[in-house]
Amino acid sequence: MNDSTRALAAVAATLLLAAAALAVFGLAAGSEGLSFAWGRDWDLVAAIRAPRTVGALFTGALLGLAGAIAQGLFRNPLADPYLLGSAAGAGLGVVLVLAAGGLFGRLIGLANADLLLRFGLVGAAFAGALAGVTLTLLLARGTAQPMVLLLSGVVVGILLSAVSETVMLIAPEALRGKQIFLLGSTAFLGWNSVAVLAGALLVTLPLSLRFARALDALVLGEASARSLGLELPRVRLLLVVLMALATGTAVAQAGLVAFVGLVAPHIVRRLVVVTHGPLLALSALAGAVLLLASDVAARSVIAPQELPVGVLTAVFGGLYLMVLLRRRGRW
Amino acid sequence: MNAVLQAEGLMLQLGGQRALDGVSVAFRAGEWVAVVGPNGAGKSTLLSLLAGLRAADAGRVQLQGRALADWPARERARQLAWLSQQGEADGDIAARDVVRLGRLPRHGLFGAPDAADEAAVERAMVETECLAFAGRRLSQLSGGERQRVLLARALAVEAPVLLLDEPTTHLDAPHQRALLRGLAARARDGAAVVAVLHDLTLALTANRLLVMSRGRIQADGPPDDARLRAALVQVFDGAFSVERVVVDGRGRWVAVPTL
Image (cartoon, rainbow over all chains, first blue to last red):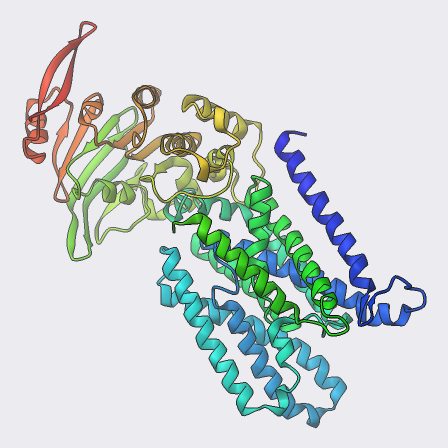
């Protein structure tokens, strides 16, 4: 085992340990503070805390993965599903389905509606995420200028969020109680959500790992990557679709959780020098740890009430981005 | 001998300007060719067309007698190694992993590199003296170190045709010398080496010079050709003269700035 493999293994082991430790707290954190009497609380743990904890891990993993794909694909260390318009697009998809579901839910019976809604949500969020990032790319005319790309993403994000707000105003009763969800929350994650999230992770992680070398080649620049025989348009399309699928699924289940996708790959890159294969896998792991840590904190800081986890990640992520911008000082 | 790479009547408009205006040129195996000319002459554009990275408005490029566009991307990438002007490459992957990308055309996106690939990577890194910082991030290397890594990446392809755009950028004199010796040796071993060079004294060590200006080839020949040297001085507006010096008993051409 050489030095770099050893460093890699150490980071992976640390992240796994952190995830396990946090999971213990996730299972213990309830509305009355921490309680490790799992035997007594078994029903509560199995029905609520366990899916919420596992769901937070999977959601974080999807966001971390999406961020690592975005940063490699757009050759921009500040890229993030949130900053590329894809999260706002996914949010709009979710709002539209929720509004429509509110209207039709009563017609087809609540149980059916819930299942339909869940798949509808993922589909709409995926389509919205794709549409969001496509709009951003069109506006920025490609990925050549990082600053323009970022600004375009912000503009698209604002526009799509405005549309979401408008829909929420038009159909307020369908979306009552969903505001917290849209701020980003793990409170709605049940076993159904966990299954959907696991499915998305099982598709996006192995597929993106398979194409990780294309992201390595993109380090050289687009023309050089093509000179190496890469069919760039096809590879890029596939990776954008994977990023949108990961983002869309996460947003559909846990709302708009900001900055996990930005921060997770950064943490990994600070810790180890790696190619995109390990970077993608470790970013997923770091995203899982970050989101579960934020979630446990969000449930504990003002217990018995809880903060939407999205608010917490936005605060910490925003601070992190500020530090990053100050330190970089260049584009 | 047949040309390995051949361009005929290349025309290209870029932003309303005629970047290439009817360029025809052929390169044979074993040739060491320097492309020179003032800024905006069309040197880099020509190289990217020869590498198949850009399509011409008119004209054609043939690699081993077959239209460049008809080559499957990966097979073409095994035949043609292209080094871009510096500036685009940036990232946090290690120098050695950057050089390894040169083997991508061999094993493909999904194949695993084998011992032969690793040996080629090692050779290229030894040649460009990159081993000392093999584990460091590309983004943390100095300009010269980065250029050597990118060069090693291009050399690691071990392609029969090398197209290099300003390979000496940021290199100090010893590394420039090492590079030029390496390129000349590759040509002697049968590769066709084509490099855009700004340093004219370095360019005059090549076997053949392409002198370009305003999208055309103004002269094409060995440095010993008096008409070529005259064209060279002329396209650069007489900013230098080409003089004969004798080094170690061998006659050489050098460019001397006219101050």
